[in-house]
Image (tube, rainbow, N blue to C red; front, side, top):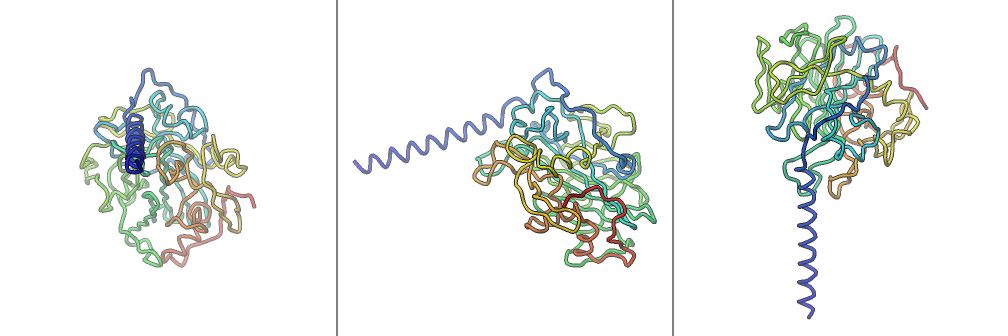
Length: 367
């Protein structure tokens, strides 16, 4: 009798697990686009730094999956017209995905720091067993550092999941310190041709998990040749910053020309609601508080984009928020590269003697 009961329990458990996996994958394989899609996101929210951001905006070599690639299109955080991260998975098929990157700018006496956020409504896999392989609200970040004296991009930081990677080109005055520089990075001009004096760093974004790497990194699966032609190992789109007044729309996944993306301000759009807490918590855009505290800013920083689907036992809120920018993922330093990049870079790599830690333009306040 005990053996029979034990087998009943085991069988019931196996049936429950099988049903759960079937449900997960039924959700994961639901239609990716339901016509007619609607443009629910409003006009980009910008600030006085828009033209500076446009000048130094990255070119993005974005890998897209052959069948599920619509999930690889970057979009506004409020692509579905609301700030509720818990419904992103469900609203995804009915909404136009307007390619968008958002920026935040701080400035010292010597350098500009432009932190870029790349948001996707879904982090996904073709098949998910429920163990943190997919989740709603996927975010990754990158940062470019510009020398004001030369107007050259001198440092590139990219975030690949919970790891930050630092790149520097030779002759810019930076060297290994606590952190080893991963190598050089590529620059292109306004039409996408490689140029040492170009103002646009080139990054590669992987399909599905959307980790970001410099295009010259060994992990990159795309490259730009000297003549400006682009080669992907698989399938991909080239995303470039939209020109002033240029119309931006959801592209086809086989677009041959570079696709424009919209630019908007993290500072103007998201910071007020993060500072006062109105965008953080259940039914909101962000989640996962961790304390950040420096001489200028003290707050419970949201680590994640909010979500209520998938990610298994590790929790459903997983995509990295625009503010949780650092070289690692430890409490106490998360956010340092966003809120105090001059100090954080100097702590991690050897910087030139002219490097300033004093900010002359600093929009994040609130102690």
